[in-house]
Length: 406
Ligand code: UDP
Ligand code: MN
Image (cartoon, rainbow, N blue to C red; front, top):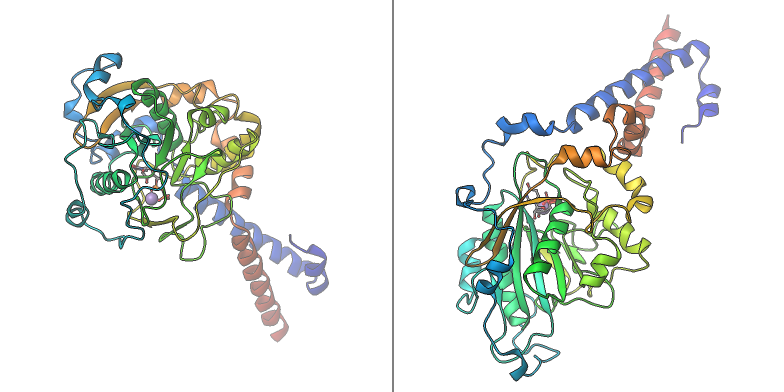
């Protein structure tokens, strides 16, 4: 990347020395800045920081309902399935493009809604026909109550027009563990599978709203990435071709085939790219809807205290191909603290022992300090290296000129 011969031709020996000394200083400063900003807090000492971060009605945790079967009967929509015809291939009440803005309010989203026919736990089944799909929406969640209220109402409105049989499941990770989106998705699928025989599992970010109801939340013969564009990514394309974030859908078999998400991504970033590698490694390929209908509005938010950028993500990604069969939905370990059927969704609270996961997969999650060179190389952008190099060259030239003046 750096052409040393070129530098040698234009600089003499003492200038070379000066050049390399300043280059080293810049690299050390960059490294220091990187480690300062990316060092995530240690899980157990974070209690103070997390004090302000509420979980959804933590006070409601009265029991630990490990025996789901006792609760299942309560939430199932009552209907004689066999007596009804299949819903039409093309739902007839779709409205197409909807006018939604990232600043949409709860009042606005409540207006368009018919919440009457929703069964407890956020489940719905069309009145006059059998849905072509039984879709479970799984929302990995922590501390985004405002978004959750909007997202869930929007989903109910859209999914009813799509004539699906569906249920909405909000899966929350208890504090103080760093957020882990992939693990929550796996825990969600494992739990939801026990509740009902869903045919399609959609992992859905809480801050993404579809803007066209022709984007049907059904599964396909390949896993589906429902998002082709979003207000976050600009108007013309998603960030990169292999981006599989925000909203993805799998049949039970597809999810099992790629072993779901990795459980090892604590903090922000990487788990969606890892999923892309898993899907490909399992011999499948994500499909997407047409650009016109796969547009999402991204609700605005700041970074999260308990979801720091994961400094391990590039190292983990580099091992994804060799690791995917070993850990995923089949090996996910969690404790279910609560399961509540609320009016508009089912709330599942889980607890995870990050330390025991780290211990179990130690070979993948070694102490960060031994990884510093790899992490530095994979995290400092080429542009930062080019800028450091150019600044040094300029600096050396200026020094050279000053030298020649005397
Ligand atoms: N999330 C959450 N609380 C957090 C962090 C993440 O609920 O503290 C969930 C939420 O569903 C969110 C998703 O994880 O939409 C992805 O995280 P985030 O929005 O931070 O990622 P982005 O794609 O915006 O960078
Ligand atoms: Mn987001």
